[in-house]
Image (tube, rainbow, N blue to C red):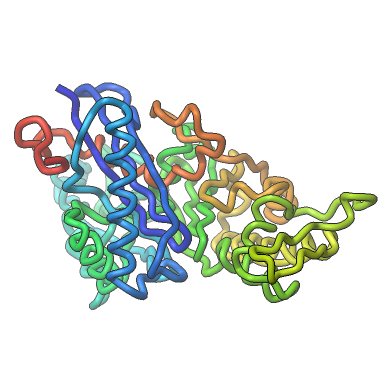
Length: 400
């Protein structure tokens, strides 16, 4: 019997749902996925629960339609929720244990972990994850496995990733309105990182940027563990708004220009390449053209601002110089032309787009990095399904 999993992302620009299955202990396969434009969401925040519910209903219907086309019928009842937005924070928490015998054993390691996990998060927050980093034994830091070492006080450094509890409740309410139960909320940036990175990249130091519509999440790894994570309030919608404002277009026209024509880097402009066509959407709207250089200048300025904020943040934390495996871009913003080149110049790192690893089912996707976060959520669901207790009978708690 195959284990089945589902992941939902209610983003600023799109609502995504994916389902996957795997034989016990085997490689995960995404059997169906769909996306539709989001309604009732702005800057990763739900503004209208009924509108967001309608988006979820629509993507559920699309999944069912595609399932039927494949000759199967599964009604999804439960999904992991992929969470993004500036309300997501990562804060340090430290667990401590006395080494009574003078030598660290399992008891001390477990006690340090227990204490770290009991440290309360701020009021009004919901915990998404606690990520173990390194150990400190007396004055010796950076320890990966202190078992058997001599010392007096053992400390475990962790990162608590948490979100605005009201935002999570709103997302759950929207999903429940579509008769979809939320199993557990997970952070988009770390999910994306788990989907697109190799273990050796995390060990050598790697940065993952999940470029969404309303914000950009980041996750930086050094020596195999997460050292910094957060969200910058700049996303693809900001670029669209900049274009619309600069050239007096509708948001739909600006979005089309961004996707089909604009580049993150300034290039050579001559002849037909010097002007960009703005299409009219009715007989009352006259088509016109704008300067390609001017268009790319607007896009370049906003993206350079974003990458500069990230670079300065990681420089202040003394992390940037340790990212020897470079930077990986995921999310819809990674589709922008020449974005890798601009990111390389601004961050001073090698940059590539992130194709999800360790899964099948996305081979026909032209832009698989769009689905990195939901793929990471599905991998997380599989990883935590150690007992096989997620299912009662064939579909259990995820499907009905």
